[in-house]
Structures are given as structure tokens and as C-alpha cells.
Image 1 (cartoon, rainbow, N blue to C red):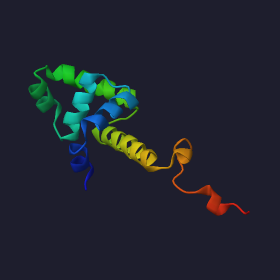
Image 2 (image 1 turned 90 degrees about the vertical axis):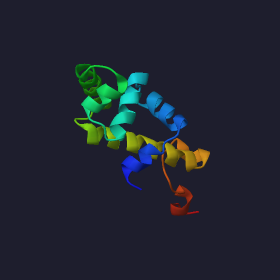
Image 3 (image 1 turned 45 degrees about the vertical axis):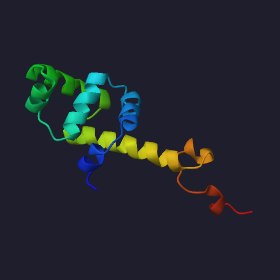
Length: 110
């Protein structure tokens, strides 16, 4: 599944997790959602009934907050955060904190 298609299927819980994980305001999260749908700044402005300049300011602040340079990097950052979240969620509790996805005991000698 392509990233854009994957992001279109995110649940409200996943979007809320992203909002907290990336420290986004509700409006910034809304703009990320619209960017993930492939909307331009003009389309976002029309959809949210705000000015083009306001959207541009929100997008610039999003880039700065997420330490990215463009929309593709922003969506990649969101995708990576989601992937890490789900990867950690599926790991046993003992491995969640270390972030490893394999059993170290298999590599140690008795």
C-alpha cells in the first residue's frame, strides 16, 4: 500500500497519537491530514476557509517544528513515527523500551 493510501486509512486514535508525538496543534494536525491527501496550499485554504498566507505560515511552522524542508519529508516523518509506534506496540513489553525487534537471548552464549 502506498504511503498516501496508508495515511488515508489512519484512525482517529492514530492521528491523535501523532498530534501528541509531534507536539502539533489541532490546526497543524488538520493541515498535515490535508497535505497527506495531496492538497495544495490553495486547496487547503479553500477547504479550511482561511487565507492562503495563513496556510503558508502554518506549513512553514510545521516544517520547522518537524525539522523538515518540504511536504514529502513531512509525510515521511509522519510515516516513520507511525511505523515506530506500531512496531513498538507489537513488541513484547521487555523490548518496547529498547526498540529492538529481535530476541537478544538468541545471540548470547549460555
